[in-house]
Length: 398
Image (cartoon, rainbow, N blue to C red; front, side, top):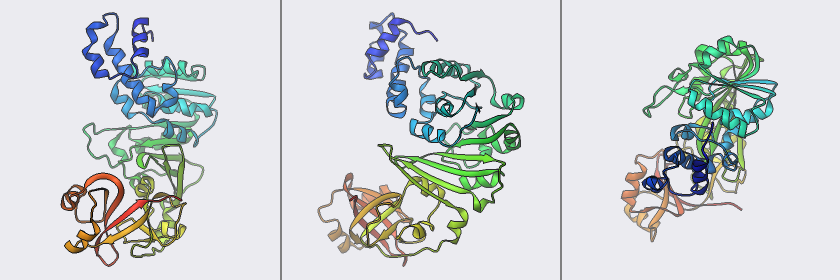
């Protein structure tokens, strides 16, 4: 992939600039492929936070905006690379090649497959820049066709695309292309291990019921936002649905990681302890919320739940290892006018969360007449005796 020197120099000189402003000045740069250059500038700006190790390299080519938005981030790609290793790997849904590039560090020979010729060309160029061209072979074509003809390998990786391109809810594996449930037997004929990346919108328990050889589920959140569901498939052992381990991982801004794992059997057998708000308040991280590991938290940590459906926890003593957001409670109020007046005295700004409460955040904010932000957090929720309350708290960390 050749980039003329004038265009490359323009990209290097204007990486930090506003692409919209540059677009209005296009006539000033007749020797520059301005459309390509602007795409590279916006791509680099996205990569500088999403893929910093790529952004640090000169010569990486970025695809159209949608592909940049859909590709894995560096933290999630690195996590996936920690899950599998072997001699041979096939990535059947290559895309931009981010996952393939990080996964390849654990393999001697890698085949990347992508049906879109333009993306495959960009990926091949980038693999060379990344120093991976000696071990990664690029194939342009349909992943399912490649699967049917390929020899057996150690690991297959695939990232099925959502069929609904209009933002609709995607619940099942059948809503994705390719439909992994139809390919499961063939995948496990061609590889000892299969790693599948799924949208966080999917019903993860339904996915485990649909597939027959799930060995583990990894739910990945970044900065407390659920990003990916990962399924590891293998025929080495057969696990019943209740035996499948769920690994809930939240990767923080500085790379710090919260990990919490449990099985369905542990969750179903756990006995919940309840309490009204005590000194501290805890909210499970997004990965645990997605996995629905709510009961087992009260057995693993000395916390109590406020109410069965509220998914908020409390304790009298500080629990620093709790996997989620942690707060010190300042005050608790019912919804009566006099009580609220005292509770909100002087409070004009707060971060508002609703958990098991009969109002939306927008409606409650309007009623309370408080703006978003500030040091205080208000949790609107329901207690065990069905009382509706507001809890005022501040983030806490010793």
